[in-house]
Length: 196
Image (cartoon, rainbow, N blue to C red; front, top):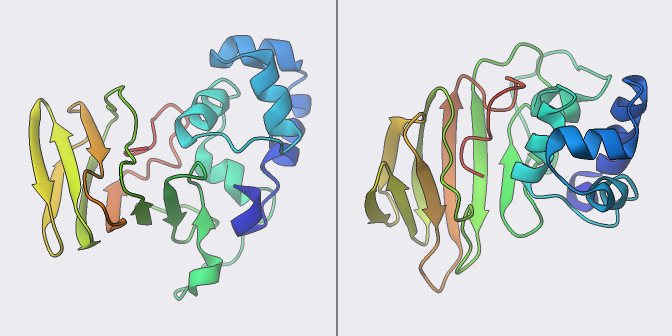
């Protein structure tokens, strides 16, 4: 996560852990991950998956948006260059969040990239809210509440995020999606990322 956005994931996690007086062992226990996972993340030796980072942050508790916003909330702006989007993916899946540091954001807009064969994991995701998106390149198989559909360029989806769901690229080309969800899955500390 650090390389593309320039954000120091390990340093930020260490700062938040120490501010709460937690050892790596205690944070690992609370977050349901191993001690070595916390250590490797803090050293920036590994880039955590979004779902792993979310588990750890929920144990603090800190929302993903607050984590990436750091201590520097900028004044609201209206336009963002591609280089200004915040990468919150896991190194394989790319999720670039629009306006990550905007205070009091009421929705998440994400530019997503799934390489061939990539998916959000075998575990179905569920969280409060609604989400939708449009496929702009490639194809994606979306499973929602046991029903699956393969969507191609120009196809779209919209569903209640409380239903169990999963995303998978079954194609041989990269899939690109522009999605939105509300409430922002990156601001409610107890909520899971919308689909990663």
